[in-house]
Length: 295
Ligand code: NAD
Image 1 (cartoon, rainbow, N blue to C red):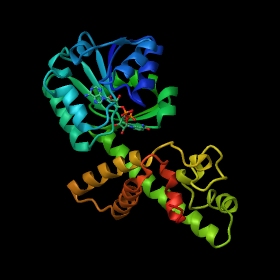
Image 2 (image 1 turned 120 degrees about the horizontal axis):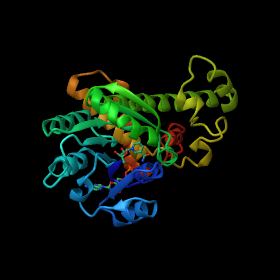
Image 3 (image 1 turned 135 degrees about the vertical axis):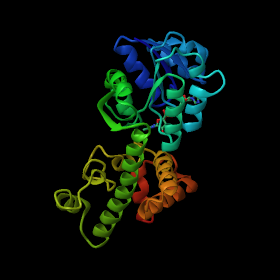
Image 4 (image 1 turned 180 degrees about the horizontal axis):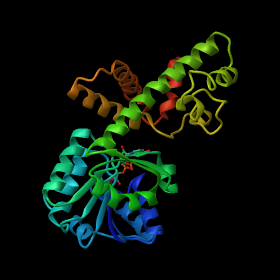
């Protein structure tokens, strides 16, 4: 299949390489020439413009920083929509706001294209390994066409409903993750300060009612989960800046519909302060160091 791929950054590079590895004819584009050169080295062909990406493509995949980039790449002057054939499938894997995802879907539909929002869970390791989870929003017909492409780049592909629902799933999940990580840090810090060592508390709580992913798979206290970033000086992993982006998107969406999210707001404030204090690149579980008063 002829696939156009736009956005060859930390995530997109591996995703693009996996599509090439599955035998697809992938035309790759990025504003960064080095990123395009790396995609070409992995077997893609280089496109020098959005028009070239769209030419003959049956599917276009995007993995871009934010909603403004997505709207401009597809629907701006000279964007993909002004060059692609009717019926082309657009798969946007970027994390963007629910409103922007629905705006993009409406524009795609008006132009005679099929579109899904398909944000991912999993970082660069999962992008490289083809083991991402995709949360997909869009009509059934678009999901059915997108699934075989997403299956190459991911291990789990879930249809979350209509346009924008992939982004809804992503921000609701990551708001819960941010809250649960801070809660886990507070619980370990409390236990340790009261004389209970981290491993003993983990052994009890990880099989009791306090257990959650932040504890069992990503424990912010060093020791109990050897592969967790807490054992590697809180190197990411999933950086504070990325968590903050998702918490902001969640707060923005909640504000628009008057959904009560006081803990989500608090989590956003805590990660925003870490970001402001120069810890944007710390793994998000590094909030443990703040809870302990170390930073
Ligand atoms: P990145 O900044 O590494 O890559 C983005 C790429 O898009 C860059 O190479 C940039 O040059 C390119 N780009 C920007 N504007 C462009 C344009 N107009 N035309 C062509 N190329 C353009 O970002 P990333 O870490 O790969 O993240 C991409 C998306 O995935 C984001 O929406 C992010 O929130 C989401 N995400 C990232 C992670 C992660 O761990 N990095 C995890 C889950 C989701």
